[in-house]
Length: 122
Image 1 (cartoon, rainbow, N blue to C red):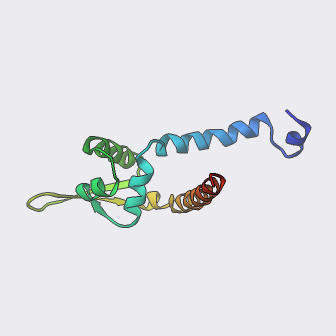
Image 2 (image 1 turned 180 degrees about the vertical axis):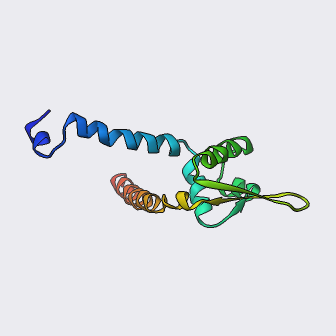
Image 3 (image 1 turned 120 degrees about the horizontal axis):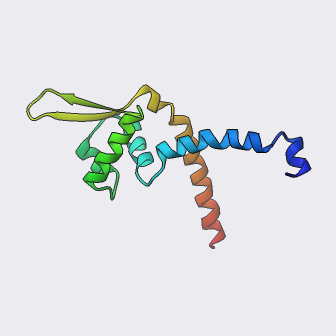
């Protein structure tokens, strides 16, 4: 470890303490589809078929799997309405809505990164 790192309080222990919660978050949100599903639901409740159309390229099987995992992690709520035919709707839970700030930051960073890389290519 460098002297500068020690002076800034960046020790092996503080690094490990920072990595563990980040790893936990990435385990829940990782993959190609979870964040697009969350973003789609952040604009309002959606039925399965609406999500399948909005999240381009996802298969029904994958969408079903990802929704189950998001529901298991209490980020998404599945509501079944007693109608004929049965209607199933997905929505963000209040806990899932706590991701809003994180997603906004990712969007801001992604926009800036895209501009930077596109400028570089010219």
